Image (cartoon, rainbow, N blue to C red; front, side, top):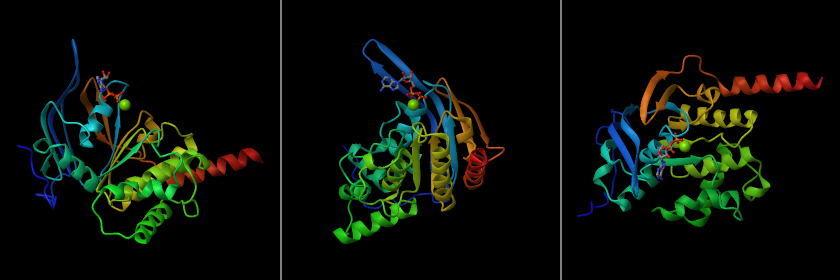
Length: 265
Ligand code: ADP
Ligand code: MG
């Protein structure tokens, strides 16, 4: 029988890890062949962490993120999200958990093209259960847009925004449900280096506000803005360590601005 949707998804163990993955395997069945994409991954993430996940192409990063995001289920092993055993829930319940606890940011922004920044940000709330009037909805979307530095751009369509601004809209959309965890797969993959640092600035601010962040990147300097660096290889965690010389995005941005103005002199 399908598991009922819990009305309240309070954490069972609030002081414990917000994410606990135990010996997770994932196979993709492709007719004759079978891809063993995750080969026994175990990982624990505490509330308030900022993780970078690195590793060569094909090492299983996106597969792992899809599992963390409840977009897919492990073939075997256990995934506890905020104390909730994800494997015990059906699709509908997973969608509910996703909506309540998680925000997603992707490399390609994934915004609706002929739709304003505000409407893009409001979108997740239209699916969820909430008691907001249109005016309240708009107020909330505008507040979140302002919090990522997009005040005055609410009515712009994606095509009228730079890549960095589009990614900020996507981050605002991810934040509209007040998620505990932000999952980002190559969020700076389509951005130039300065804009990437700006986005890391947004992430560091969110993390300081208490949001747990898990971010896939293949750029070591981007990983240096996180607090912890996990490297995957062939479907396994190869290394897992604290970032030793952590970069502060605000400081780096000032440095970049200084050096470009010196070049122009
Ligand atoms: P990464 O994000 O690190 O590049 P992926 O998680 O995308 O790695 O892929 C891990 C392995 O699983 C690769 O061998 C890839 O080809 C395979 N894979 C990923 N997604 C699918 C899928 N939907 N169907 C079949 N194989 C897949
Ligand atoms: Mg990938």
